[in-house]
Image (cartoon, rainbow, N blue to C red; front, side):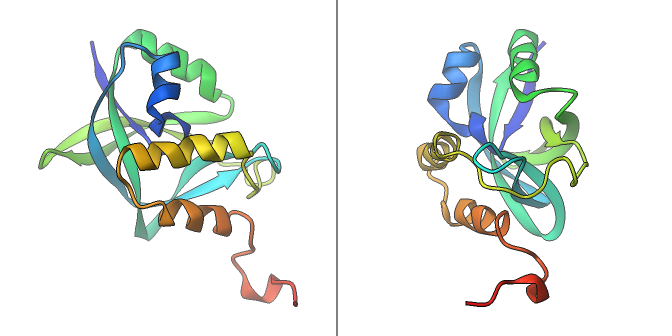
Length: 157
């Protein structure tokens, strides 16, 4: 039985997905409304995640995956230790459909905002470009993941 997987990070990259899940097929672009993209983990090793944020949206590449593909993805992303799975509603060809998405487990102390590694970031960037998505949101997430949200915490020049 096939299911939809909503990729917002590393697995937006077609080559990386093909290497790990050769039977997965891209089926369209959508967005996670009410979420924002962030990077969490240790510096140069941070990974992408999505977090609730009322007025934002994160673009996703929807893949049709098999149970075998899902098992590979589970192992690669660190499910269930690092990421959990959630079912979300997205639009595909004008219809509302359900898709599985990986969301980093809620432990801000263990997974603080941080910089991703260059290879990881470039893979996501290339996925955005392959999908003809605006990379401005990706750079916004990078900036917001390395700067404090509270302006009183910002360092002086």
